Amino acid sequence: MNKLLIIDDDFAVQTSLSLMLRQEGFQVKTCSSPVLAMDVIEAFQPQLIILDLNFSIETSGDEGMKALKIIRHTFPNIAVILLTGWGTINLAVEGMKLGAKDFVTKPWQNEYIIQSINTILNLSQQKIQSPNRKKLDQQYQFEHIVGNDPKLLTILETIGRVAMTDAPVLITGESGTGKELIAEAIHQNSKRRHKPFVKVNLGGVSATLFESELFGHTRGAFTDAKSDRIGRFELANKGTIFLDEIGDLDLSSQVKLLRVLQDRTFEPLGSSKSKTVDVRVICATNRNLEEMVANNTFREDLFYRINLISVKLPALRERPEDIAALAIYFANNLKTIYERPNLSISPKAIQWLKTLPLPGNIRQLKNLVEKTILLTPKDELTIEDFQQNISINTSPSNKNTLPEVGTMTLDEMELLMIQRAMAFHQNKISKVARSLGITRFALYRRLEKFNIPFVEL
Image (cartoon, rainbow, N blue to C red):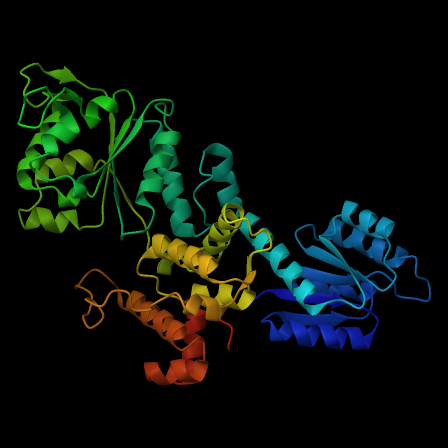
């Protein structure tokens, strides 16, 4: 829950603003003078401060400007909105130069001040990075990968280290977790970055077209081969080839792929001349290849050939804090595309999104945000707007079955059930606890244990 501090010597202003902002889902504290405020800021650690400019008979705004300078110097990461009943253009310009994010005059419009707060917080949340993430971004090009979760940062550190080698990488994880994005990041941080990056979805390539698609063919090689065709491996020469959904490949195609990975040579369909290729191979799948090897549906030698470096991407529900950053990232991109510059997501909606199980992971979240933006005419997206465009149980085939033994720990299952119940009951703690068969206090302990953010709606 975002924390706001109101610094104003007028009790009526404190009461009016705090009541309105609490109704919007913010945690609010008030303070009557800048001198007292410094201790409050230190203890409360707000994300945003609403600061009055005048605390005496004078209306010059000097007291507030001095306070703004001190706050910006001592707490540079806290956003400040200036508030005054004696506003002038010069005063506003001076405040913005000193680091204020907005300048609001009394009497204010509730809609405007809420919109301003949400916009400022959304932009600041997108920019917040952990020290470890900042360090990685200074070393590597990860600008299109959003998140600060420790699991994600460990993965980024791993792919950053191996990117400059030619080691084959296998990326695993549920559908929609960003496997293609990770593959592109490996290529962009490699010595092959200026050469082709060729993507092949093996799940969409039939066994009859496999050789033609990957190795090319000569004219007349089969009935419809009316001209020569260059295959994907040849197109990726000196660069990187990304073989997505490799777990969908049939056994006969696996044999053909293994040869080119071992010898770096292949023959176009219909030709007897071998061609040599120099490529970096990255593979991805949402299947359990070790289990497939045990069941003889995936070749063991191919598995070890592509699995020198293995990266498993966590599901989005395993890094709920990144859901907020991703939602804001998508909304900020889409508001430019759809020409809606004032678009924002309400704080309550941000907290609600964090509780969703999102079985479709990042892909589902992006789809939900874009669909909601397209179908919602107003600029601030609320919980109700998102609820109209999502079905919580999007995997009906799995909803009545337990996960396979070994795929989830008891803690992971407990976390998933709590997240689903929180989303289904819209954070109503009594209903969530009742549906899970535990007391409210037991639920609070588990929310704290799993660090699940919530706003009791």
